[in-house]
Length: 112
Length: 109
Image (cartoon, rainbow over all chains, first blue to last red; front, side, top):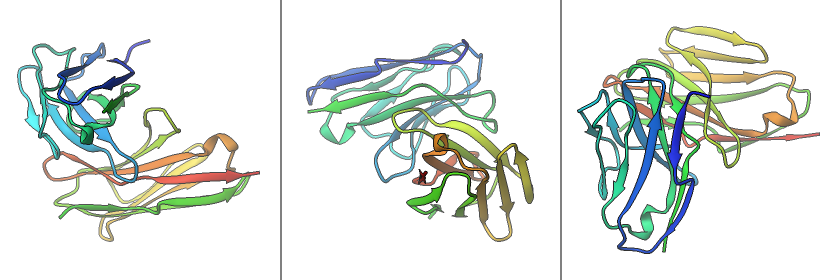
């Protein structure tokens, strides 16, 4: 089934460690996004990419980095994890920056 | 600042009708989305409104008034499986999505 694959689905991480959340889509969508979801808050945009080779900062980019070397892959890296980065992370794609969003299953990250 | 408001939690009875409201203040408007999210799962698309009026899709309908900065999601003939959170999101003038915190809908038999 076509869609978005995220890995890992769940991870416990020691503070200070480096972590990369992987995201791959096979829908050839141009736009991709990383959101975090925390209880009581709306989805917050971390970084986005409107097309391969370009990235941009969202609402909460600090402590995170992304790359978009090709259309399909959009990894999110936490250079040095902190407990406040404990969250559920969703990788999302859209055919254009105006279209419907398609969500990955999410990655639950716990930083101790 | 930009803001999306929706009730935190609502309770309804199986078979009944429920309306979930969403009000927004954003810098520009390029469409409003409703997503459904079951506990522990990813959000899934329900509806998209860019013009004023009512969009009907089976048991679910979504209404938009751009002049009032207001939308609602109407769920008819409620089923237990409709127990979920419902997320309202607005695209602003920069085509960025602003998300509400979601409304948790509890369906009782």
